[in-house]
Image 1 (cartoon, rainbow, N blue to C red):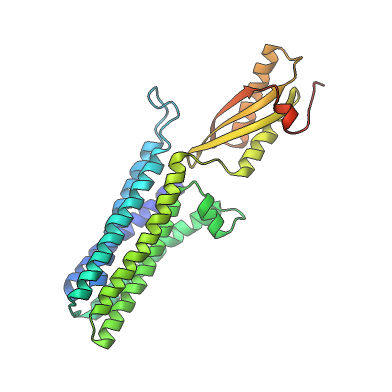
Image 2 (image 1 turned 30 degrees about the horizontal axis):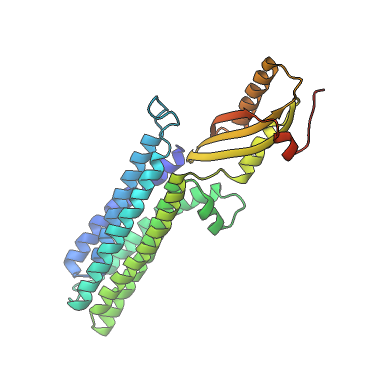
Length: 311
């Protein structure tokens, strides 16, 4: 796994642990429901970062007899578990606590402490969010932000980015709820803020679960990489290149298989040599392609691309 991803996770974990302690302490002092749900949110985020770090470690294990394709998709499994935790613990607890506070409002005490903790939490969340933002921005190329979010195979950075973004939005909602409660004298607004925080987390959780599900099932590599494989495989003795199938086992682990029509005048030894050349060329140009399978297919040259004979 990329070292940048690990750095992003470590920064997010350190920030969220400190923030969780501060929020729970402030919630105990002020009696704020929104602060309590924000504390739960930060605690869930901390657990999520630990799970993603564990997933990274497991995904890096080499292939063995029991798992010949490697353990790369284990990262996507833990990403899916993270999405479930965000939904069940983050969103669920926030909405429940908010409803309870609306039904049985409790006036906040020492709200200044709550504002101070939220300000510090916003600054710390901002630091780890910027790190995740830079990592994501460097990898998105020329794609729009939305398209990059949909297409990315880097579940780790996207999870941290969206979780932290939701956390920063939640802090603003919590501060707004606390402020309106203080100005109006109606403590129910604090509970309403908690419900909105839960709804926000629910939306993020659904998006993360959807993306993790697609990666677990198996998603193809970027079309640019696929065309790069086609170009790298084109050489003397190859009459045509047909279907190219790719699948991500992890962000930096791609398995590729392609149909190749070889010139009928080639000997078996020539075909073996060209296959070896194709594998070396593809893996040199695209290190993320950890395995490539070349399947001789007579019709490939008839259906795809120009024909290239022997020189």
